[in-house]
Image 1 (cartoon, rainbow, N blue to C red):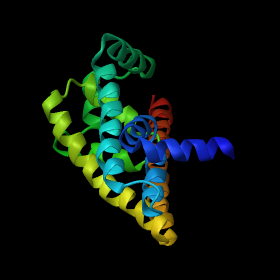
Image 2 (cartoon, helix red, strand yellow):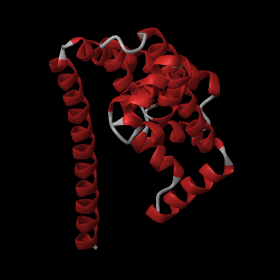
Image 3 (spheres, helix red, strand yellow):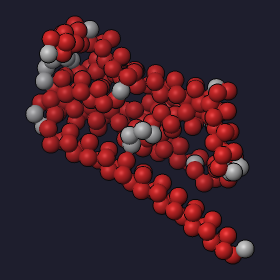
Image 4 (cartoon, helix red, strand yellow):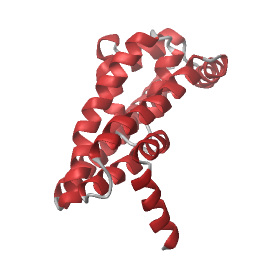
Length: 196
């Protein structure tokens, strides 16, 4: 309990650095800081601004990791293991007109944010374009989730539970779509084997 009291005291003393580090580590912890700001423990402005800077920095890390030779090798290995050509994969997965939508949705679906950032790095999306899309997506995410966290700190717990429920719904739909695609692919393979 003393450790928690110490951490809360450090967050209160250094809200800008704390928000930056927490944003770099996890968006869920950043929502927790927003809850604390709603309770009056910390100012909301550092959580919003510096927390988003931290989240943006980790997004850039994954983007540039995707652009690195290591990221490209991993991508090539995954394509080879699936016996898929690059053009087939690009055609099936990403519609270029919807890049902003993909990046924005990845902020709300657990486990897809870092992979999406790395993917667009691998695909050599220009950094300026990534910068604009990612900042726009982060502003949408933060205006919903951090505001809900702040309101939860003020006593509106139902709103935070609702927004968390929406994130879980997106995650469920994402997993359901993947399962449908896998089943569809398996049926295609089975159909072609019996046809021959």
